[in-house]
Image (cartoon, rainbow, N blue to C red; front, side, top):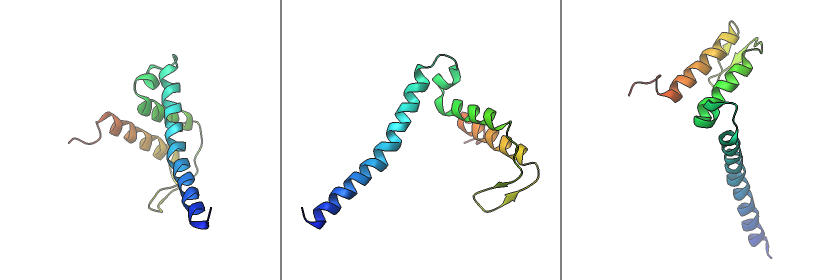
Length: 100
C-alpha cells in the first residue's frame, strides 16, 4: 500500500467515525428514551423531554456569570438567564415562540 492509498483509508476511517459515532449515540438515546417507563414526556417527545430534564437539573446550580456566543457576559441574575433561555428553547420546540 502506497501513501495515497493509506491516506484514502485514513480519511475513510475518520469520516466513518465522525458520522457513525454521533449517529450511534443519537439512536442509543432514542432507543433508551423510548423503552423507559418513568417519564412519558421523554418517551413521546424526546428532544423536548431532554430540554426540560436539563433545565430542571441546572436549576439547582448557582451561576455567577455566563458567556454567550456573541462574547457578551451576563454577570447579574445569571441563574434567571439560564432558566429564561431554557423556557425559550422549550417554547420554540413546541412552536409557541415564533408565529409563522
